[in-house]
Image (tube, rainbow, N blue to C red):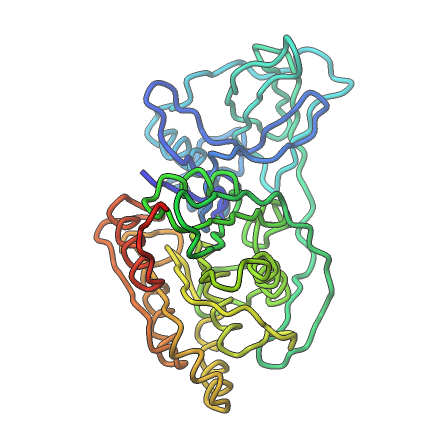
Length: 420
């Protein structure tokens, strides 16, 4: 099943992409190495956007409900905390807390809250082992029972001010440099007729996206799967993870990071700019990746980014799964006004096919927000928008949804399915 749980809740970094049968191998919230640094999250980590809670008083039980304690919790942290409310434990290990081992050079885990789940993968060579999961709390050092690595929790500083480019005023409050991660490519198995850039969700990467796309029955498509820059995310209290742009909340009223959106949309456009002239071009994505794809659609219609730079890629299709239109309520009014002033913009907006899919049980990106985003696009002048609702579907994908996506892409791009 195409499950993409947000390693972001925009959750602290992690929701399990899949529940393990034998062992609850939580996707990595922090993968630590012997020198105490925090490496990238596991490729299995998917990408959500949530606003949930955690335990603050490390020495006491969670009060009443998870929402009463910490505003950020990963999927497994939330599950464990909910279990504690019922007097249960889900982790298959429960080792005593230190001090043990060497204190001189502990592995420091930075956190914006005083309790989190940590996974130790061991050191290098003989010390390497399967990930061992445990709670790490402020003031309570922990020693890995397998490799004897010593861990301490250090509270981090609050996030600095946001950087934004207003789509209305165009005023820039800061300039940042963005370093994108590795790009993965899935070659077409048949005749190359289309190229689609697919954007992962928050906290995920291009590698895991490419592995999922390889299984689709679309032999004539080349998939390009870039990896977003690693940056602090306001919704996570400043926690650093892969993100196409910064975001403080997922709502119609939310102020989005337009500078970050412009940078990501430009990166995607650059990836598409070198494709053969006879190949049809598209953009798709999941969750935050879907939001970036939808934003790219607005840039295509207007012929420029929010910063005024020209957008030159000729898009033929856009797909967004469990996503949203950034700054929806204000954005669509700006879009409509700008589109209506240009015959060329009217033509481009009306001609671009857009498919938006959303589960009505999505508790990360609310279903109503996804549905409203679809309506706002239509009101702004996009005439070929299809919105598909999936009963009981949360913030992940299922085969039925992906099959319909494949059918829609084939029809809209006129793919013949030929392998020769």
